[in-house]
Length: 513
Image (cartoon, rainbow, N blue to C red; front, top):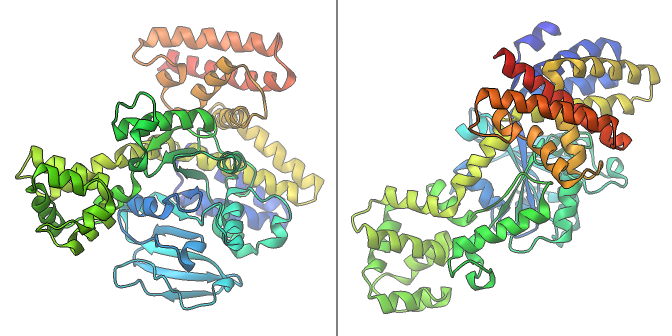
């Protein structure tokens, strides 16, 4: 078994260390627990799994399409939007319906290359969908599209809540193993909100469960996006100055104050515009139609852009059907952005215009945060989730001796300097979840130390000299050691010991580097 383990690909040293722990423990535990460890090993070597979650009609599937760069997830309300769909890399494009009994059935894509609206099966017998795509994005990221919270369909709500860990009562009795396996692998969450953050949004984030054990959402494994940013009325946001994007950015900052520290950030985005720009839906014919609209006199143009009805019904040389298509793919805000780009550069190419629309959608910022929060930390996120799963499996075994062996092995692993980051992630999660109350300034410091791989950012001193960083790391190590002994509660003291050692290891690294 160890040879096979060594041959597998792990995201980084932390995941490799947890994998070795699982492999070493398998002969020492019962068959059921060993099988669970085998599943942990499989997930450790798989791409990071990110669940896209949020309320119904928040635009989750549209955003999924933008992230993947293909209009494959159904966005209209239908039976497929009631199911969990996992988008992962495959050498051949295909969709499989997975039933509650574990059986699978392949279904063809529709004529537009998307998942068909009608699967041709009894939806109540379906666990979830598996979509395999030859897509570069999915080589290191599996995207899980979920039904919306707040849906009138109780079964769809149950599927989403199960994924988010918000249904605690009798969960095992209500969800079959295949369904549970389909959604339980989520290690990070991209949470989609619109203009108003509601109580159940906060509750869903607070209860988010990564892998198969209770690890709540926090700044390490959760990002939120404010979708449909173009629908925000600028006049309703103080300081926006009539600018839609400024209004969206200010509102996102306010929402971040509500949702932090459950999430690393809240970013504004226009999912529809991002989907159109990324999926190839914007064509040369669309660009020519926009050029035709740009030639209209200013008064006519402004009148048409006042409402969707006026835009599609007002008489002009561009056919109404063509305008309806533009509206469906770009909405009025996107159309206005395109027309302004053409005004500034009349000879702009269709490709350049598509890039302008992508820039206007805010997608680049979202992808950037996915890289810095998720991809760059995939090793730590996956290792922490896997370790939580190992702990849960041992506790579920019912064998005190087995539980102790697993506990002792984990303690040996965590005592190693190279694995201390897992302790830091655990401390960060406890503080972010409010399980351990800390003064605001110390909470912020714990978040900073645990939320970055860059030493200068961990210390909060970007751009400073190596000597300054070294001195500050030692100073903070000594402070946290004192705090752990004097003035801290027992729970705070445990956090303080972890942060002290993190600073001490940073100090050692800087001195020897």
